[in-house]
Amino acid sequence: MVKVRFAPSPTGYLHIGGARTALFNWMYAKAQGGSFVLRIEDTDLERSKPEYEAEILDSMKWLGLTWDEFYKQSERFAIYKEQAEKLVAEGKAYRDGTAVLLKVEKGRLVRFDDLIRTLIEFNTDEIKDQVLMKSDGSPAYSFSCVVDDALMGITHVIRGEDHISNTPKQILIYEALGFKVPKFGHLPLIMGADGARLSKRFGAVAVTDYRGEGFLPEALVNYLMLLGWSPGNQEIIGLQNACAKFSIKKVNKTAAQFNMEKLKWTNGQYIKACDTARLTDLIIPLLKEEGLIEATHDRAHIEAAVQLFKGRMLTLRDFLERAGFIFVKELSLSEEIKAELGAKDLARAFGLLAERLEKAEPFDTAAAEKVFRELVAELGMASGDLVHPVRLAISASTIGPGLFETMAVLGRERTVGRLRAAFNT
Ligand code: GLU
Image (cartoon, rainbow, N blue to C red; front, side, top):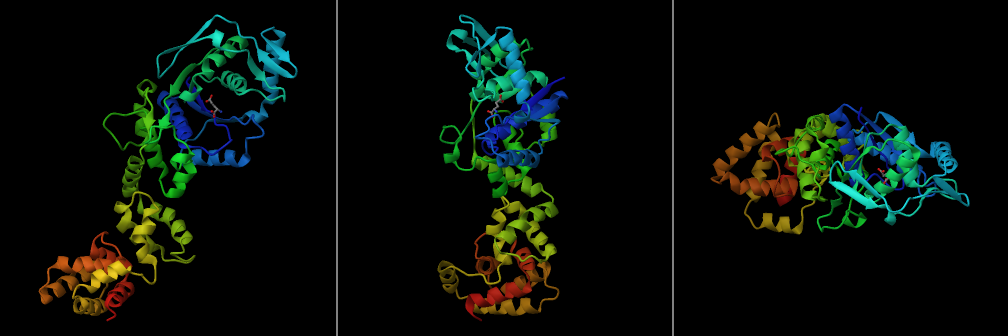
């Protein structure tokens, strides 16, 4: 049975490169009916932090990448020590002070057939004797990694390309320990738009940052799975569906380029299709954070606003910027907007519109439209001449959803109040 693992070191947050590695492993496990192990590689006791570990687990759960088995290397030091001693006893490793090193036989070729790339070959002349146990008693990364992969029965090691040079060294360790060597697949790196490796400099790299920015997990997953793999001509594909099509052989050999525009577009597609109640649950905390709603609020009203804007958002945070005008008591208009409105002779039309909307019963989309259309006909105006200024006056924006729907969600009091405030009528 296929068994894969994701083995993050909790020395930082889960970043999108790591998340993609986790995702490809997870998809491979699902595609093959195998299992997925999450192993925390916290052997570096100085640099590993519990808060990073907690954040990694949290991000994994948020992405929906559930695991079948869970391990922490810090709880397995006795196992590494025992395996190192075995190698010393067999003469395959030696002590140097309290450290243990593997003897590397020179003049050999170590080769492996990478699942993604082609045959990769290293000459052992280029490989020094390998530290297995450090002098402080902790295992070196390659040693604990190999011991665990072997004892946990990992059949396929799928990880970032930055680990290629570790692979021959690890193969030598498998051989020394007498364990079966698994298959290896090295994923191409993810580059920023500038062609450089993704880094902090590039902006948000942690999964948590994307969550905070208002990305939906399924959108981020959809985007990440297409970074280096393609299910054919399909940009929006659910995880289930993707797993059914996933093939490790079809993963690209060349670096993938991170494209923020595409990620945002993908997120917008998922937001549009998302259940409004769920979106509302996600948006309410953001509105609270911005002080746009109180602890007690009218949920139905927020839901109506979310429904109105869900086709016009790329991230959940866009809602704050685009629909924020619905939640502020006083809308402050910029000097520019005031000047634009003032330049037109609209005081009378605005006054009449306000007056009639105040009396419309009930106050809803249809009533707002009726009042509006009758008024423009009466004044001999083209609807378009009034739509734009009215939108500016009630939302301080030139774009938005349908004007009458917007009025209905904004409510009578605010709509009328803003029309009046625009010309002090
Ligand atoms: N802990 C290593 C890392 O985070 C794991 C590498 C591997 O998958 O073998 O880079």
